[in-house]
Amino acid sequence: QGQLVESGGGLVQPGGSLTLSCAVSGIVINWNSFGWYRQAPGGQREWVAQITAVGSTNYADSVKGRFTISRDNAKKTVYLQMNSLKPEDTAVYYCNTPQRANSNSWGPGTQVTVSG
Image (spheres, rainbow, N blue to C red):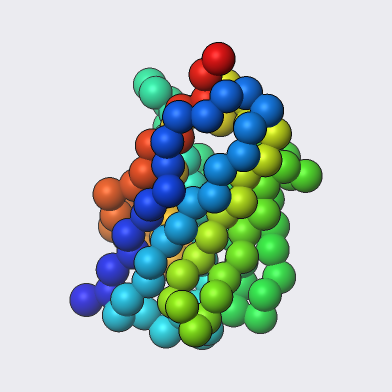
């Protein structure tokens, strides 16, 4: 059925920036909410950001003011722009719909490492 595939992770210095992409297929992107989640080494998966079908956004306090979630319906892609990165942002990042997240259905994720 629907698929979400993350990309764009990598190694970045503290204070640097990175943009993650989530390619969406089999899901009507403009009629759904999407979120970004992350799981740090040895940690629990946590919610980071969301964008609703009407374009409103919300962020976890830990990333507010530094991260921006957006969506391009024509390209069927959800983005996470990450600025002023900190070592504590190091994690595997996942995109998902709330429904799939609640069903514990996840894609491969993309690794972000902040080190320097």
